[in-house]
Image (cartoon, rainbow, N blue to C red):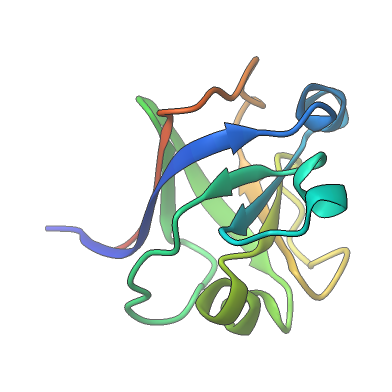
Length: 122
């Protein structure tokens, strides 16, 4: 049985999110978020955080399933405090940046308000 570490529903999608998806990245940030930052993010309401982010955990974006391959050194703290991480869909085994979480799987084509994202530990 899986246990959710964090669940969110996207409430707003910044105008530059599609460009970042083309670079295999998705920036998440919880409300309230400054307007200039929101333009680059999938914004969501802050959720309850239960645990730590670790390689091997699963992430779902709607019905798509991903495996976490690497977690940056501040990603857990950023997600807990700000609801902020950058998902990078490249399957890297070491984090490119401290706030980045790397995932194995194809980048979603789009992100829309109402999309559900969940991180699970098993």
